[in-house]
Amino acid sequence: MTKEEKKKMVSHLIEFFVVGLVMGVFEDLLAIHFATDAQITFHTFEVAFWVALPFAIISELLVDLKVFRRTFLSKKKSFLSSESKKGRF
Image 1 (cartoon, rainbow, N blue to C red):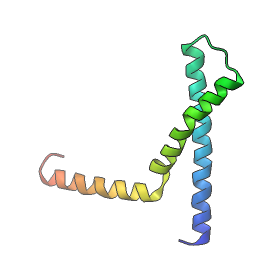
Image 2 (image 1 turned 90 degrees about the horizontal axis):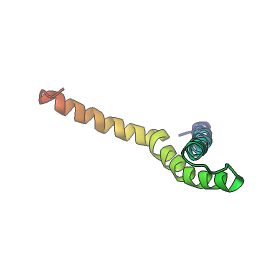
Image 3 (image 1 turned 60 degrees about the vertical axis):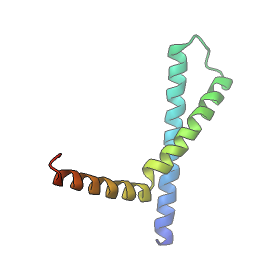
């Protein structure tokens, strides 16, 4: 992997991590607003941020890494081909 490819991959990961984190915080704040009578304060935002952070990290590590996709897809293809040979698909 060249330096340019590594730089592109890292920027891709950071970009999607930030977007995922922002969307997770926004989703948590919406849920808090509609499900409770709590006011949205800085403390509420802080709690939503800390709740969304691990999910953003996990989703980046599991879903967006090319290595995971390559591994998952190769296992899925081998599973589907073995199942189709058995006449299940």
